[in-house]
Image (cartoon, rainbow, N blue to C red; front, side):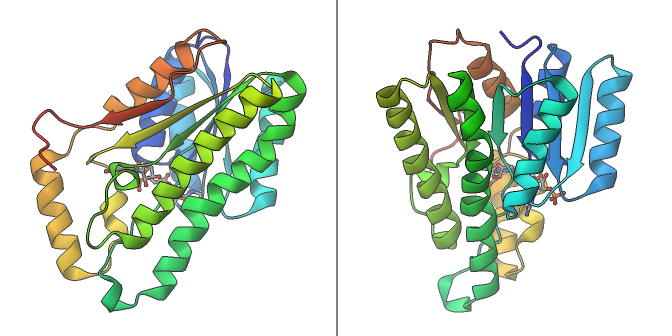
Length: 247
Ligand code: NDP
């Protein structure tokens, strides 16, 4: 059931997070939205409320443990608890390793890996205490296969796969009844490519997305499907891409 579930979404100010917030809210979820850009979050909350949905936002940086703790607190204060956390914030400033964009490597690790760790650390005591909860993450097809130009990004997404699988197993061993779902999107038309500063990589990615990109709504549908399953059922891993995708 989606209705009345309290769902925290990080990376909600655009793309996959935004589409998921709208869809879940339209199905009766109470959504708690986090990202750094306040104007986009505010607009999204206004749109959802205008359509009769329930939403609040908090400006947060996924790399900050205290910001993650604060958004969990906001969910509890506003809606009385938290049922689902969709750890979706991420960046993909791809480039060849020889370009030595080490600041971007570090930022990618900070957002894509530490952001997930911070989010899980913030919510896990609540989920363990209530013996229920759902952790959903956005990995990538780059978390299943290797792509030149994506060594660091891919590594962060491989990390997410391992981390989520162990979370699933430990939750089963410990009897905490926590559900997990990891999503592996292919090319989704969002703002993700805007962060690529390496010119050739940027052009190649734009061409690939022109050919194979699909709407963020497709990922929102999958998140909704996972949330909608019975509380004792884990639908765990989804790859999502167009039928034309040969890579
Ligand atoms: P967008 O760039 O549209 O969205 C990324 C979101 O992450 C934004 O809301 C952005 O908000 C947020 N974000 C970035 N850095 C931070 C930070 N430090 N703290 C908090 N929020 C942050 O791209 P997508 O919707 O495509 O990306 C969502 C997820 O999907 C990412 O994890 C991405 O890796 C993954 N993915 C995307 C694919 C694609 O083809 N688009 C394919 C596979 C996976 P703000 O800037 O306001 O903070």
